[in-house]
Length: 104
Length: 142
Image (cartoon, rainbow over all chains, first blue to last red; front, side, top):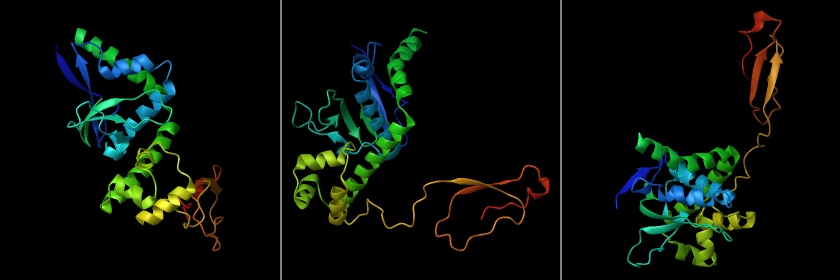
């Protein structure tokens, strides 16, 4: 299995950069997430993208914007999920390396 | 070439969605995220974590998490209480009259006077009268 990281330039900014994982030159995990949900949950996806852009360009990806402790391994504190609104049907998981570097 | 095509295909869902992301939604989201960030930074500046902040506010930790997530629609009463507890200002109601409009004034030489009673500077753009070419260098913003 060949894995690559690809920077998402359209979402990244001066405050934080967002990356996604590409497996064997196929769709990225993030692209698959968008494709799977873009017809049924458009509004939720737009809200997620707006928040990611805000972190990238203005605020940085500080911990308060995420739900922490989402890994199966309690010792792993890097796996998080973007905070989802009450009633939300989507949850975007990520690996947060720092406030400036996040893998979606 | 194959790699470029694959890359373009991968970007298409994101590009399609970003085309639907209106400036208004982005601005509203930025505002809520900025508000949450300001509260979070003030909380950290006091040396508090979310658990301590929750205790200070008399709220559950899950409520604080929601406040700081950038997704919450705050009530004025809540913002007032946060302000008092963190000694920050989130609601600026003490400013002079807010600016609700901008205007364009068309004027010739000597027709604009600064009104001494104005309490608020109204953003304006002064455009010389089209027929009077001699005044184009005379009109100045007040």
